[in-house]
Amino acid sequence: MFTALWNLPGCLPEMEPATFDTLAEACDFIMDSADRHAEDCDDYHECLQWINLNTAFARIKQGMSEFGGHYAFHAPDGYCYCIDSDWSEMQGELIA
Image (cartoon, rainbow, N blue to C red; front, side, top):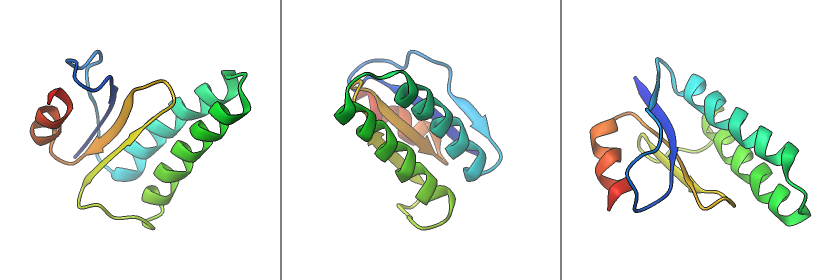
């Protein structure tokens, strides 16, 4: 089982984590959010950062990147977009 969410580092999570049976489903969840942000941004460099975030999760989904079950990337909005196979471990890292 994989947990996906985004959170402002140093704060308690603003959303209930979404859970998925597969890493691919969790990546799709994060990539959909990144796509929406990229479509709505007006700044070229910010759009590229959202595209890069999407690409990072696409590479994870395709099995091209492995970090041991914990994936976290910072986005242009200041939030950290995360996927983890152990939510209790990720929760402690996000609050710290």
